Length: 161
Ligand code: FES
Image (tube, rainbow, N blue to C red; front, side, top):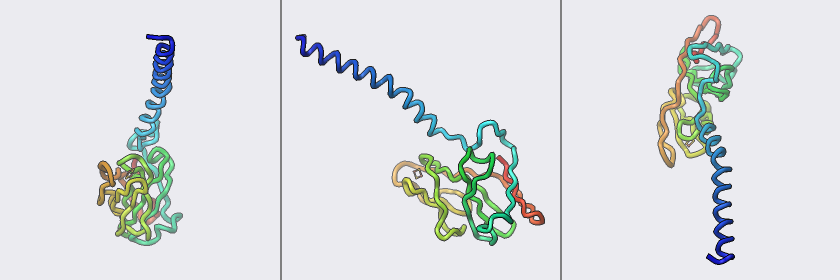
């Protein structure tokens, strides 16, 4: 091995080692970011969140849907609230099960339509959160639903984490 080849060999090895050392934490951070828990840490399952439906005009009629950030619910990501009937609500995450993008509100915002993920085109039923069209690559599963109870006299929707 001549001097020039030896130097090139050393530089190649050094660059490879530095690249591996720098990229390992980045890969770990990337994997952690992809493993978003849909329940806010330190909020135990079974915790309930109350939402006053009278304060959400988008949900004033049956068949409507909106996206809402609810404190303590869904790890800081908004949830879909679908008013599938006058006193029946379905709540499900907006975090796409394919790669974690935020799924969009249907246009028009009605439960008979689909929520579409802008990243790879997966579509979910706006009344249940179940997959109705798979993404262009890979597979998605149904959006996680939260259990709900609605008190029609107080207009309070209770969502369980
Ligand atoms: S992240 Fe939603 S379809 Fe890919």
